Image (tube, rainbow, N blue to C red; front, top):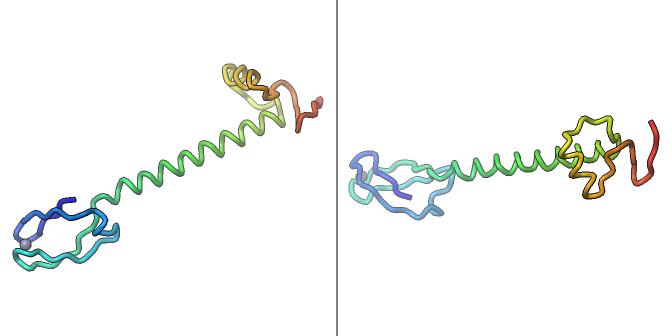
Length: 105
Ligand SMILES: [Zn+2]
């Protein structure tokens, strides 16, 4: 990353890994000004964390939803194309079918 001295505006090229996200004290080699430099590349890791949580939520929700469909069958509202897809891959969606045993409600 490129950091700029607050006082003399000199620009310096610094390796990203040398500046931690919480910041580090740096000293300008031109005017000897000392300031705390924050890592400007903090944002991508934060958004990466959000992507991780959103994907985790979607996967968890999908597993719960398919589980409910398997246990409660046609009592759970399900889009027609998803219904056909699940039936194609062998997931029992018509009527209740708990652990492979069909049952009437
Ligand atoms: Zn300076």
